[in-house]
Length: 563
Image 1 (tube, rainbow, N blue to C red):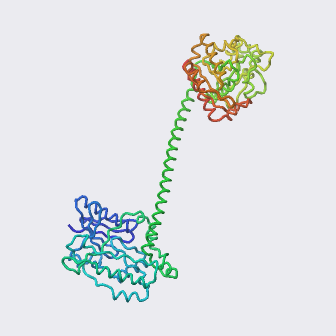
Image 2: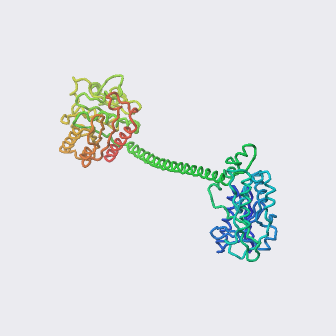
Image 3: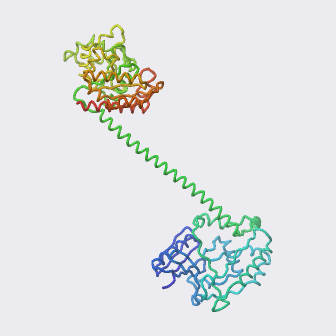
């Protein structure tokens, strides 16, 4: 089996040939290309279950390598025939690099900007070429190039020591030259002879660079090739030279870039975490929005239920100040807007009620008493039973699409609406409206209250935050049950009105009714209702309108079951 062939170009392109099959490489740089080439051969080695020999060619030079199944790369001595044979890229035989060759290679790199490949040991410091007389001194100390043969000794014992780049951040060029001479002398005295020939040595080969975030970063190619800025080299570059940085400066640049990459990665992860949290919030928000939309559709569908006959809803609590008027108006506006009209709210208070005052006013302040005195007889004939006739005594609520029939505002006529009068008005309203809301007074013993109770299809009980309102409501329910209206009590809807000034135990109040009624719905405090002025339904808070819609849907659901 022939060696696997690796060809790497400085721009990151290249190719890998294994078992005669060639695959091209297009990486962001030479370091990434080497890693990709190594990974592809390691994959084939794993398939075969043994390491594969490979020959790497880069920048006109070749390296014999051995790539194991896990991707480990080690130098492989060339045989004599391979050493004598020119490489596929016309590279010379591998030699122990002398100082002059290293100087030439490094000088070329400092001019072209091409980095040394990680297959080989970095070249000798290029500063020597800039020191007067250094070139001649190196000629006298340069060792001869020696062709290499495969050593019989183990791999680790045949590898020649590598020549480190001397540090030159401090000291003169002459001191630097002496340092290089000493290093070269140490190298020639420490190279171990092989069993075949003491003058033959293993080639100087470095392992490929380990995976590093810095090497993978496209900025490193430019940063590593920038001229030196530190030490003696930085000083010389300050007067116009273009000397490459020392290993120490390169290490500092590498560490600086590594820290920058770490900061960027931390920022990226923070942004990613923030994006995930925002996505989670958006998901929860979307779920809530979908649930709210489904709830809204369901409630509107129930409120729009057509009734086969007029339905009467009484809003009652013996205790005053429990919010009967605001509840009546809120339910009337909600039902009117969703049903498209066909709703009337009647203030059937035995005394002077508040619904007419809180509702939108009409040009003429007429009331239920005026209807009884002036037009009741008109509705006894077919010709007189006109909605326009009734409209003279009611008050349209504009965009709320419901109508208000107010109680009389005169104290002199407040007792004119008795049980018979209630029946007469109730019959007239039933001709033109399918949903009649009756805002009752506080005295459940008067005749027209008893008539309203007999006619009711649904009971709504407003309760304020105080304990007194809850106690009055409980007593009222006891009274209704004693009068034979247990069905109304069981199907009742309790509305808990929150207050800005009275903070009662809402949980405790709800517990009093949860076993007796069908539904308990809280109505939040809203300044637009607390002022006592004319109610502007559009000025209510969204939560308040949503609570009235939920309450209206619960009422309509009870009415639909009585169809």
